[in-house]
Length: 264
Ligand code: NAP
Image (cartoon, rainbow, N blue to C red; front, side, top):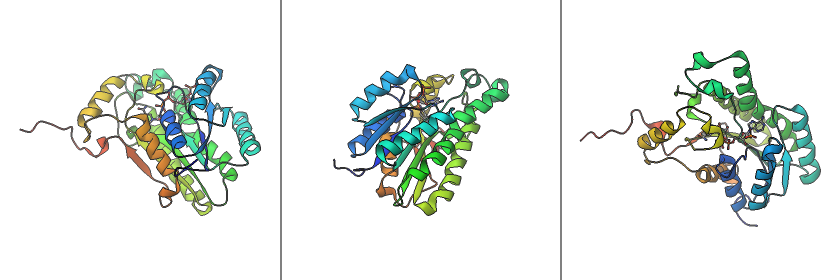
């Protein structure tokens, strides 16, 4: 298989539907010649992820609920026995209890909800990085996570996910600093809003989509495959000098100081 990821073994987490950002990443990486392993969080999603595995010719389809240390250990064992290692980790996982994504941040936040959001959305990247870096070859590897502008700016309804994504982005920098000497690069993509299952839990998400499209320099929202193509680039040797970076794929929305206005 040819392509700039030919021969690379990529573990892709977070496929829940064909609209998932991870589906766009799987498509792009498959097109660039990577070998894929996909994961599913529970039996409910197993058949959907198996369908994706067929579509993108994935070699492995493995269970992974990131709240379980046992499942993370089993995943490591499966990758070691079936592939003898891994070159790329894609972390495309986020979750907060739905009731924390309504109303204001202080209005909705609870001790338990804060802990769950940080555990699943931020700690899980560190946990997977810690478990998988020993499986990456001496020549190096690449880890990538998905984040959102809410990590650095206050956005209505995003609430507890803001601090969780801020923690995730700080983890990218700490992991990049520690793994750099092993030639393992760690980056994040800050994607613009995309209508996925996870996004549907955020109250007012539809307004977020139209406000972003209106204000973005490109005048539209982004598609999962656009995020996927960027992920494929960042995890390839073409991006060999990039680590610890958060790269925006948001049609340019984050550069705007003020929404586009008709000044005429
Ligand atoms: P999605 O299709 O709903 O994917 C989210 C994935 O996270 C699902 O596969 C979900 O599995 C998984 N997940 C949740 N809890 C898990 C757990 N305990 N163990 C393992 N997996 C778990 O939504 P998405 O929008 O593509 O989200 C992917 C990533 O992109 C998230 O980090 C999200 O915050 C980020 N992001 C999204 C947007 C957007 O607008 N969509 C923008 C910027 C960044 P289950 O469904 O089985 O729980």
